[in-house]
Length: 384
Image (cartoon, rainbow, N blue to C red; front, side, top):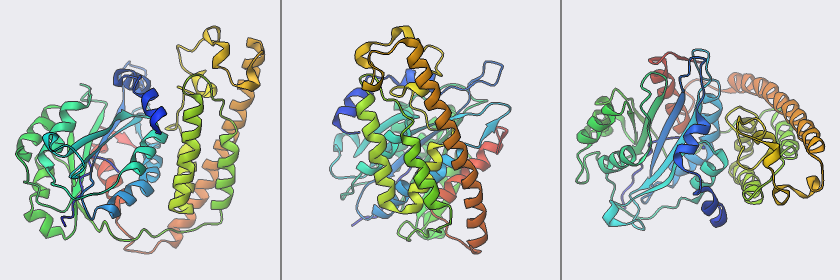
């Protein structure tokens, strides 16, 4: 059985999928845009291309577990005075269950800033056989995704991981790299195996052609989690944080349920994963303006006068606009207080982990990705 993975990285039930597809990618990009005071938009766009062929369960598990660590690290990024937002797209390839006519490639999710949806999609992935075409999946993601034309402020990256030769398939990876350069997209390659074997399989060449990074990991290595005295408190605060959300509209129930589901998925991986997700939920990256009144109220186009009675949750039905505003303000104050507490505890948690961590600590998916992102971000004057 072939081992492979591609990850152009690491971020819904049937009803939710139907609802979220209503939103166009243009609208998602509009919601994601941040400005630096000069009208320039700043985004970090990451495409994850995950090989879901046999023996890739370990890498997929790393992606599930370490999504939140990557999100947390990116939440501290700045470009000048602007704080760029994060958009993640997800592809799977190399799975026999996918269409051979499409090169065994499927777009699982276009660029999205919905962290719950990104997590849900990662947890939906399964592995099965397959033929893995690195050049074709890179080319597909370049053609299908809206990468934008901001070459100064946007950081645009593909992460692809695997352990089969980079040269398979009918699309030459060099042609895909040329296309990436035209779009100002950096291709980073992660070989799951021996460093020199990856070089001979042209994984390093695939990265070098776009000034990307070539990295190696042991995708089957168990993740070492370091427990801290602050974990239990952060998890308890996460429960309180959930109580500050006011679900409304057609997406309200499904999205609220998805939030709880992804809390459960994280907790099912390990307590530390649940903690990292809670930290992500306390950061500026976690936004839910499409279904939560507290986040929606911050949007420039939000208008209380346009709220329909049927869109309101039961606790707000029959209330006046003034009463609704007071309730939302109360929940916002509660949320900001809880988020601040989580962030302060996380600083102590990270300091504790730094002391406990030994030299030569694991280089799993999150670590190599974060290192590559920071290195490439520095070229565009991003700071942490």
